[in-house]
Amino acid sequence: MKDRFRGRDFLTLMDFTPVEIGYMLDVAQEFKRKRLMKEPHPYLQGRTIAMVFEKHSTRTRFSFQAGIAHLGAQSFYSTPQTMQLARGEPIKDTARILDRYCDALVIRTYGQEIVEEYAEYMKNPVINALTNLAHPCQGLADLLTIREHKGKIKGNKLAYVGDAYNVCQTLMVVSSLMGIDCYVAVPKGWAPAKVIVDFAEDNAKRRGTEMVVTDDLKEALTGADVVYANTFHSMGHKDIEERKKAFAKYQINDETMGWAKPDAIFMHCLPGYRGEEMTDSVIEGPQSAVFDEGENRMHTEKAVLALVVA
Image (cartoon, rainbow, N blue to C red):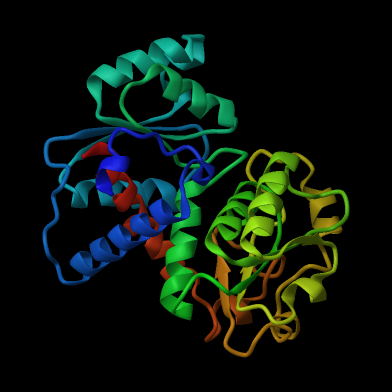
């Protein structure tokens, strides 16, 4: 199985089969065990990983850099603003030079077309650490968290509430691939991208699962096994106040969390804004899996790196 991954780009989970996604989760689980038991696992000894981040980051940057160190490799971090990209150097030139210096590129940027252009001009793997379209590293961590807390992935109902952007769209993709009933609760006019909706609905139909985008919060949350909140406004959005107003009735609090199953878990990719998309009592409550979810970012990213770079 591991031979399927060597040298592949990791741009979106739409590029991977359910079997391949499951294998990545198994590798991540093993890395988590090794970390817990303090077993060395320098599978990328002597390798170098470039990191180019255009967007601000806490979890993605630290989890990747920590994970790279655990794997025995070195990371080099930069931003487009401090590179010649800021003076107009073409991506294709930057990509071909980085390709000769490093064994992989981890990139966090705005447009999906940017990571795709790097992938076009690099022979070594390119890993998407977030674009406007997709957040595949977060998607893997979310699946691992669900599997740990619910004992399985397939057959759960996931209710997503928040900005219908990269995290939402990635959850729709992985839900449709992995047998999860997915309900996305957003106000009218704030739906996910059509290309994602079409992909997710098609895959869900073929697998006999539900893929629903609704403006009815109670419909989405009722009977949910997983309640997933996200910020109402993402990085780069200029219509923050308009979004806050539109999403004002979509908060996850003690009452709305109560619409889900009694043993439902609460998830959030963070950063979270207490008093907006969720209350403090929910994120700090006994159903919260948020910080396990954040930790799992590191383990799943290590799995991706070890598989595509090794």
